[in-house]
Image 1 (cartoon, rainbow, N blue to C red):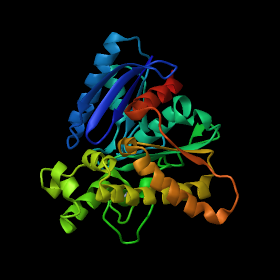
Image 2 (image 1 turned 120 degrees about the horizontal axis):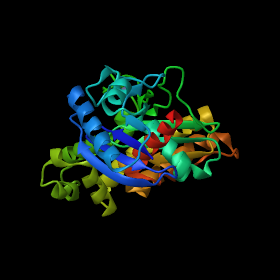
Image 3 (image 1 turned 180 degrees about the vertical axis):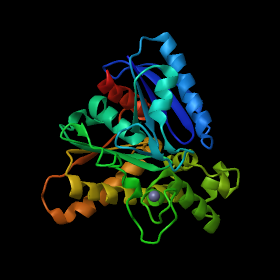
Image 4 (image 1 turned 120 degrees about the vertical axis):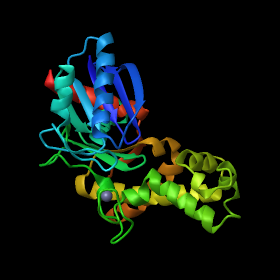
Length: 314
Ligand SMILES: [Zn+2]
């Protein structure tokens, strides 16, 4: 068995995972996101607790950030307090097990490739995770593509709009600002402020206050047929589909997998994404291109992938 830890901006999940990808135990805690030392403490406690109940040989840690090519440190994490954090050595010393650190979306991509939607991908697939932010992971030739510095596969920070909205990474106009859960909420809130009469349904769910509109609430409204909520999904879906078409031009994977919390809205997001994707590819005529599928492993993908990648250490 190996342990997988998935560190997001708000939650840390940890699990004991069998070689076939089965999660035997799963636990969650809040991320003390603005305190690097406490975040590390939560991870170490979680590993000790999981390790006490099972025979484990290695730990994989997936973190939402830029991970060094040597996979020992988190160089930068927009939603966490880590700056050049030597996470691998700190955690390994504390728990007495070999530790591998990986980008969280890379870990999720690996999990989908090995055990989920990507099993039909042959040797190449791209995963895009649409959550609070946008993440990505690329599998080419049956291997996780990490790049020269460890930072490959970050479509969320590709330029979408020159001089556009400011992004947590320090730049402006990144795709993440247009295709993510944050973008969905921003669009719905804006619509509620600008067209309160048309946004009646959304506002009713949010107790009358535009600031109270959240991602899950937009999903609920859209499912019930609310026009503004559906339009917000159509907009982020359009950006997502355009990005998927760019990925196909660049990498030609067999399969495109869309995961992350916002993707749990299913066709609300995927239908406009497929539409934009097909339009963007139409100039290619009858050439074959990857199909778009929803991820299968849900919110345990990061845990499963991190645990499986840690097997390289055994
Ligand atoms: Zn960015």
